[in-house]
Image (cartoon, rainbow, N blue to C red; front, side):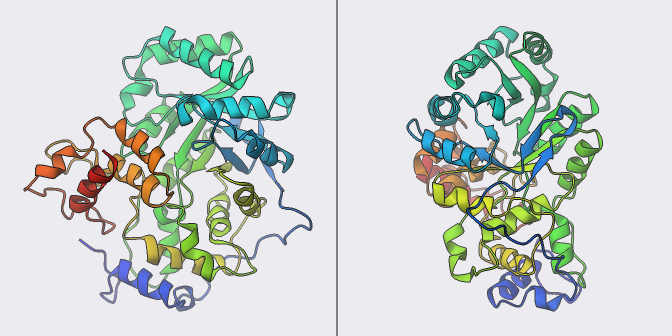
Length: 413
């Protein structure tokens, strides 16, 4: 059921109309934060590093994500490094191992000046020896004898963090000097449960989580200060604060809420781009260390680095974010929401299906979307013959999973 403001206005319609008309923030005096630092002269580059929790590592606040990095794109890695980026995030399964190889090639001779993170999907029943083989494969591709951070990747089941074989592997790999720190990444419906367990049992040095302005209740509270709104995923900011209080490093991903950048180009001006505004929102949270973002071209790298050093939003940022939410809000699945998780009697992982749809629809990367969808097994196949439509109305953000999941299967299967 749609949320309504105190005046009976549908919240999503308020955002849509207000943003599209360019008046959203003007309705709420004082909602805009102080302006950030002035731009530095010269080409875009990293202007700030932050301490990654108890690891003590000083990492660039904008970090290189490689989920779509190809075999022969090591020039992008070098461009980012030359621009001051020192944190490079990858995984054994990114582009079939090509991402790790490209990073390994690009950073030869620079290993002592950069921080490497890679990941493995360590299952709840996986064995220590299997995890070690996966790590050693990553080390070969990265052309190094150790990684700084090794993450259990895309954790969506707390049993994966409970697995004693994972704990034994981490301890052994640290003892051998093959990894320095460990943790988990996640963006699925049970993210909060997995993070709470891992933090409460001191199992992580670093976490990498999906987090953007469209998931944060503070955004809606600032935008609609005079209205009575229901919090959106209130546990996500809570867990991020909890991690910071425990001195666990917090890195964020999916910060562009689908990254439909071309939709926003007509509305951008000299004060910055939508991407920069979205990054400034995340970086203004003192509990967050940095943003990991897929860097797919030199132009994108230069644009993204324009937000480095931010401590607060700039004057035009909030209207820009509100406009984007008005355009994208009813089409974007909020990662880690989980409200639809148990709606389907056939067990379709609706949130994960719509995540893969995002890669095709928003990132315009059909190949990557199909590879990710294939990992879901049957995916949304059951939707093709479903007549119950039990998931209808299950999304508090106004999405229609009963049609989107079926469309996703037809596109990606």
